[in-house]
Amino acid sequence: MTKTKKRNRYTEQFKAEALRAMDARGNRTIADVAKSLGIAEQALHSWKSRAKTLASTSDRGESVEEEVRRLRRELADVKKDRDILVKSIAVFVRERK
Image (tube, rainbow, N blue to C red; front, side, top):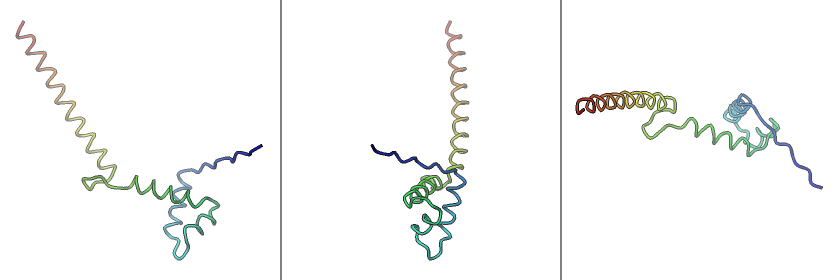
């Protein structure tokens, strides 16, 4: 009979603190930091990779938050343009009748 290992779940706050500890490790290795926190070394690597992906900049050199704001403004402009076109089509159709 095999035993299934229960998977640990960590809060985002714990992950952020672990990443800070890893960045401030000085002469300590990632393995040392992981061992001191009681977590798997691979977990630290994956959390670091995920944080790096989230904090990365887009092709335009802007942060993710700035890109979201820009895209929301662009979406609002496109919606306005669409509404104007729909109204102008309705006026055109009425004139042809």
